[in-house]
Image (tube, one colour):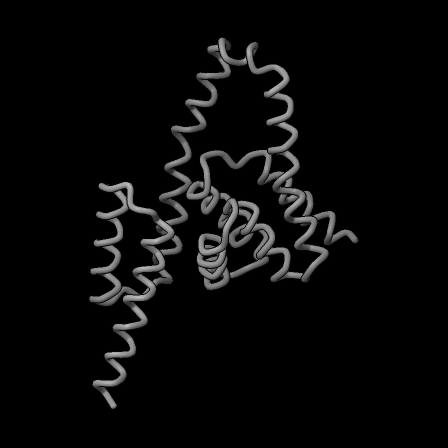
Length: 181
């Protein structure tokens, strides 16, 4: 039971403190689950990213559910998911009750802007750490550059972009294997 309470505590902490959306959550998840708790390793973190981005729903919920299930199946999965969701639910409920009072509060607006300014640091930290595990070759490098350019300069769906790059990589691998046989 102590382990279940620990996953609930850590997930609730992440739910309360992780700002910036799905990409920023990478940094938070990496720091808590890989570096501090050591519940997962770098390879499992890469799996978490892949699965969480490929499945419908918010990254934080998918990621917490994945880690919980990876560690101790359903019970951890349930409490990890609840821990991430409840803080946001409670905050949104409270904010909706007092929305007008918050809209003119410059102190709150400045605090949120400050938090927003720190989020890119977490994103780049996680990106740097995780990029060490990715084996870049010519095809991966070209796909990376193309995907970056398309996602950065167009409104093309990132999900569709992920699917297309995966399909291209599979086709390339099949052709390469056929040529070697």
